[in-house]
Image (cartoon, rainbow, N blue to C red; front, side, top):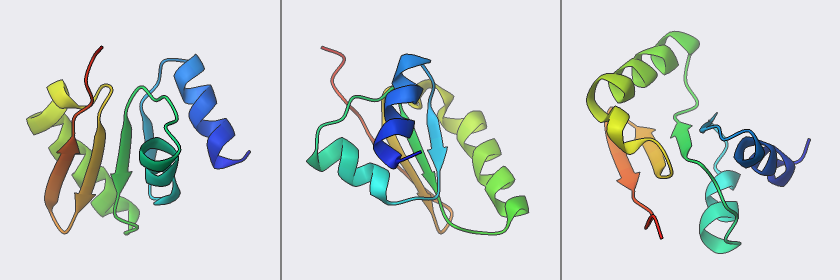
Length: 84
């Protein structure tokens, strides 16, 4: 599947997309694709990805839906989108 097809399917199924692929940022910010939330993790070993997701869920769960989240070098950046 193409990245755009993956994002369209995630919206259709009302899912947050978790990825290591930077291309989803282009789809959301440049091309204006709809989304239910995107989480981009560092391309790291699986054990660290699990730790990154645990951190997000514990500290930022309320901000994951409908926003674009990047976890890199232990830092979390959340780009919030207007609900309107």
